[in-house]
Length: 118
Image 1 (tube, rainbow, N blue to C red):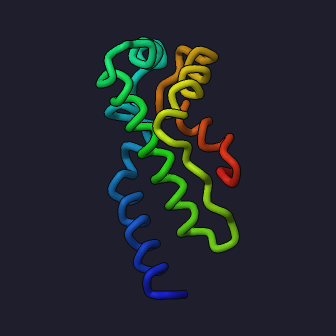
Image 2: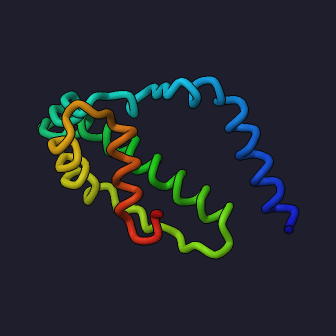
Image 3: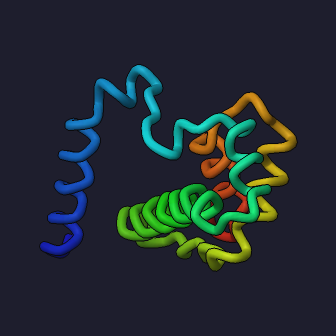
């Protein structure tokens, strides 16, 4: 095992341990905690900054999960994270289908639907 891979695994493990209580309680914070009813309003807004809060968070979440999975799994492909402008319609569709869920759950579903995102 390479030193870089071992260092990355140790970094991820320390992050998981540090966030353990929040993860164990199912706590989500920040933009990821937004209910889909709020997300739908933000994505339907004509104001770019309203949409940016949602789409930037989703794009960062998808990129983070994809890079972590790729680093920890030598045999899986890397999921292609859609470009910023392509995220809105898909997130909006997922939120409209499940308006009582939150943005974190929608982003998790989105990632699972990406090629090599499983």
